[in-house]
Amino acid sequence: MILAGMRLAFVVTAAALFVACHSPGQYGYSRTYSPLDAESRALTGAVEYDPVMAKRQPDAWKGKPLSVFGVVLSRTEGTGGSARLKLSLRTLESRNLCESSSEDTCRVTVSEREHSIAHALVELGGDDDVGPLSVGASSLVRVVGQLVDDVDPNDGSPVLRATYYRHWPRNYYVTTAARSHMRR
Image (tube, rainbow, N blue to C red):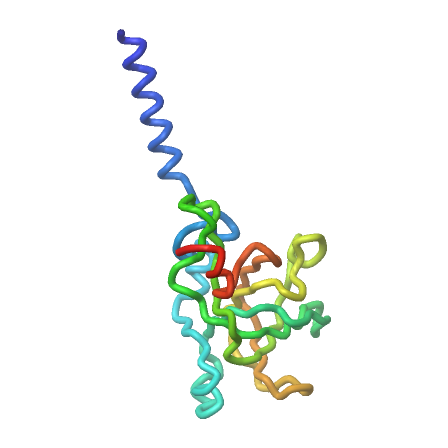
């Protein structure tokens, strides 16, 4: 009888620890967006980039920490070993779309439509730089950084120098277009 009680206590404790330690992980498998610890620190004082207001009041936006979500349209070599990403800026959805009621089927969700174009200079490392899950066309990135003085010479879009980025490879996130086969 005592042994059965000890087993039950162990199972309950193990289950509680599992639930308490559950994390949405690197790619954010949860019902709502969950920033990583380093991401939360990088976002301190940052505001969401507003392309309309930045164009109207460029001096007010220079030097200010900004945050953007963007689907990578292209990746080229930047200056000093950085990658230059052309981004289709998207809006983060407040709730992620999920394939089922299980959180591990949820994917970070951004708007289907772009609201602007911007470029980001990002120092990529490890698997984000080279390999099957590296940053490339159709990846999603969150970039925290500041606007640089120059605009892109090809399209006149603003350029951010990243102080932090987070990356989701293609098929590790969804857009609102997936509502037809996923749920909230």
